[in-house]
Length: 257
Ligand SMILES: Nc1ncnc2c1ncn2[C@@H]1O[C@H](COP(=O)(O)OP(=O)(O)OP(=O)(O)O)[C@@H](O)[C@H]1O
Ligand SMILES: [Mg+2]
Ligand SMILES: [Zn+2]
Image 1 (cartoon, rainbow, N blue to C red):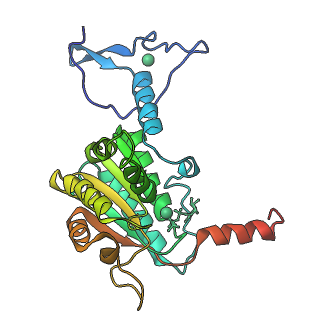
Image 2: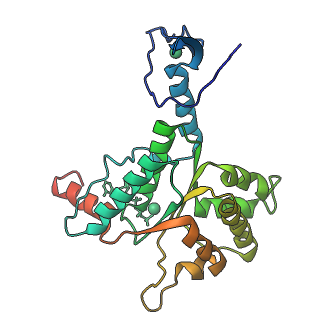
Image 3: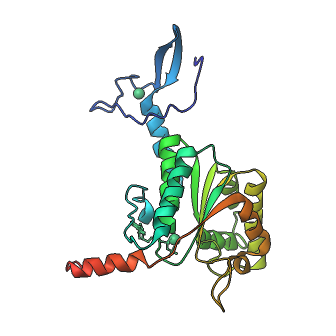
């Protein structure tokens, strides 16, 4: 019997013996603790850590981005204040969560670190705060939804876990070609999260006031969706050059081309 199960403790320790059994709880996942003279049953840190690891694996963060953290996000260009600002805002967001009223909309050109920062935030929320978070890539999502047209799975089944996720990262908003039918479903996703006040982080290459001849975010995803994002997210614009190119140039310099 479990008389009292408090929420997450914040502990991430994994006290495991070589045979894999936790000495704290003997592998049961529960420990007895005395608090103000009262004995309580608590979830053991090992069970907590296991649960968070499972959440991380289930989050859908792509392999390529699993390494991304706030610690390894470099403020590499001192001439570019947007890096420092974005990093600071994400740090504050993670520290304050769940006491935040908005998500973040990262905007900017390719390779400026938008996905890195969004994943770093999601990872930290899952690992340090036990959040059930999900990552979805806009283009893959659109393709998946389109395939439901002639497949057995319904679009709703694909969207449900994303609608219900405590925190969602929707990467590359507005990328690729989207039919009106799929756009309606994306509207359903964004609007459902909007109505439920759920925290969402978006990244996009499209700006609100793009240079002459380029499409704006509203052009790409409809004004209905863009309008909701104003209320759902704090806007964080990243400027500057492509970190991928810079990394390549550095490797070439060191002969690791
Ligand atoms: N400031 C940084 N410090 C460390 N790594 C970085 C930084 N910026 C980007 N990177 C790395 O460079 C690669 C590209 O960054 P990322 O994918 O986040 O860019 P992006 O802004 O999302 O680009 P796109 O618009 O093409 O999606 C990733 O591997 C990321 O980890
Ligand atoms: Mg990206
Ligand atoms: Zn244990």
